[in-house]
Amino acid sequence: MWRPKLPQISAPAVADQKHTIQILDLHNKIICHEFPLGRDVTDGQAVFVCGDDASGSVFAVTSTRKVWRFAEKDIETKLDELVKRNLYSTGIALARANGCDANVISSLYQRYGDHLYEKGNFEDAVAQYIRTIGHVRLSPS
Image (tube, rainbow, N blue to C red; front, side, top):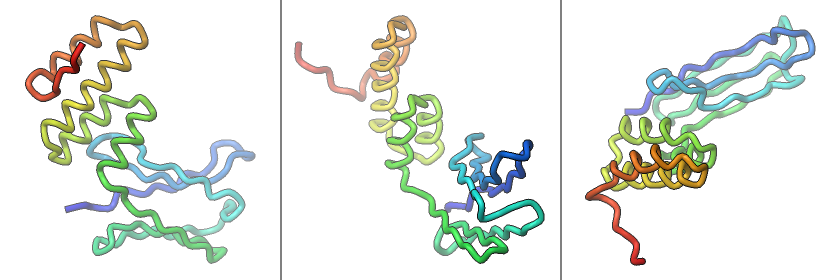
């Protein structure tokens, strides 16, 4: 069952920075989303954040009456976004934590190996390819 991620409001450390809302995944130890509030919140104004288990959403309401709804994306979208950012290890950990099947995880290892190979890191690429044995079809030469 999905639990809303822990929302956190960050006050700016420097006067010219903006306030932000961060959605954290404590299990995987990553920042899922960081949303700048911009001029909608200034020092001394309140932001109320609550989660809704029924819809799987997190809502943020400011004292200026702005409302944002944050909804969790499906696992395929999350994995695609992590791969686009070359965060393969995080994607693999997320896939395992969400019970994805071996073919999905092997595909991530293969893509990670391809990424490392393209960077010239052949030894680590081979280590990733070894993890795909028995799951990924070989392409004909």
